[in-house]
Image (cartoon, rainbow, N blue to C red):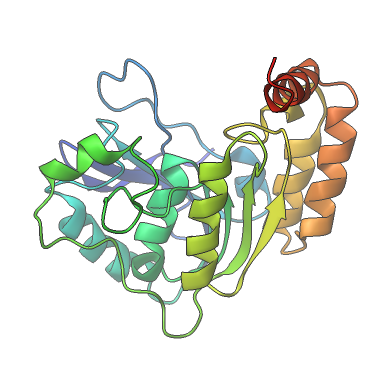
Length: 248
């Protein structure tokens, strides 16, 4: 295993990885963690490294959705680093927001977004108050990103339209701004909608297909169907939804 390399090191944001001199790079983004007390240890994406990718992990010291006083500086480092490289990105929830926030700076070619947020700002996502407490820390003039003129990266947005209707609204707005992204709705998957994949190799197969540039909505839906057959979590979500609709 190649040694870890730090691309950017701040008190709030960090970008570090392995094999960063390679021409193809997989970028992953930190997720929201309860009880976070700073940066977590870097974990290499071994499946990507075995396929010849370098791996860059963008991490936060706080659950601030990558938006803080160091955001602009990280953007400059990312723009310099990704020049001439092929970049793919994966982000879950808060990490999905990070992917679209830095999509232009990273020059992302394709991305896999799982239950991503479109924005943490009330004027852009007034339907979702979950992230609103983080917005006051930011300069009022800060805006998330400009929609890409060329349509932006290819890829998928995965979400649960049944138990997480707010995630569907985020997906609608993201796909409007990034029209080359396709949707894969996974009813009763929850947030994020891949947790019930843990009893089957569905996520590994999906990741392999993404790295091989062969991921489609149909494949994700098929993996979802396989996973739900043995998922107690999926069954609980369906039962809870039916009872709520029946008023019980």
